[in-house]
Length: 343
Image 1 (cartoon, helix red, strand yellow):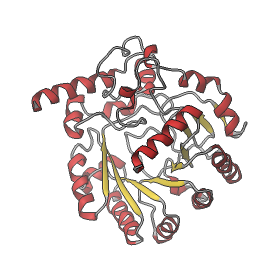
Image 2 (cartoon, helix red, strand yellow):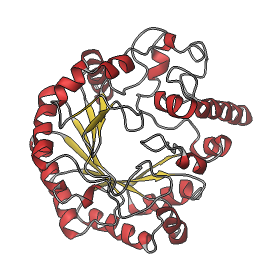
Image 3 (cartoon, helix red, strand yellow):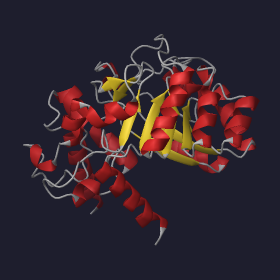
């Protein structure tokens, strides 16, 4: 059996048994950048979860079957104990991925990440320093991030450049993959700009028009589900989304969310064990129960399998978690048009 079928079997088991296979842990909301497209609503919010509670959380997750842990922020490296959390996670057997803007990566951080065999995803907005700094809202960030990436590579850390493309940096869709090829690393381009975690719609003004986004990426945005997962589930069969089923997000305030951008806390790990929240939250139960047949408009739409519809977008941007996502509908129309042109 190849790795892909084994992994799909693992995912299917996690879905069936409600194992939080993949978890995103926000270590802080503080950040040294001020990217206008960011979904963090308050960069000054204090960290509300102690180191001891985070380490206990990791023990809970290991017992529950979590395998993939993403440490993020804000800027995760601004939390002084990030390496303590990362080391415990590796000792427990998690595959650790660090999301960072890269500017704070120094020799010591690179050594630790290499020691932990962590994967590091660096937000990289453009190969043009002027465009890069315009996105981050801070002068001189391109050179600092570039140096951070080089340090990671010098220590043989697995690096991926992630490219959130918006109206501020459309060139990033081409210039960053070219730079990544020169550096010998992967690049992942996406055009999904999300609303703020508190529901603020300000970042959406920076989204590329659907047609332009479709031409840049050649397909729908990468989402939480496996490729063709929605297409493989006939109406009424299985969840349409990983959110709250095999994936969860824990914020720097300790709130447990079904995903990073779906508002509404299921509970807080400062008040209850994660296991209890995961298993008994009524909010998570309602999200898990959503099936294709519950979507009155989308259930019979042939574009559902590829439009990139998102429960969170439908709720935050259009007011109904079961309704159509206008952003997804626009993407689907643009992709269909692009397909016709290619044909």
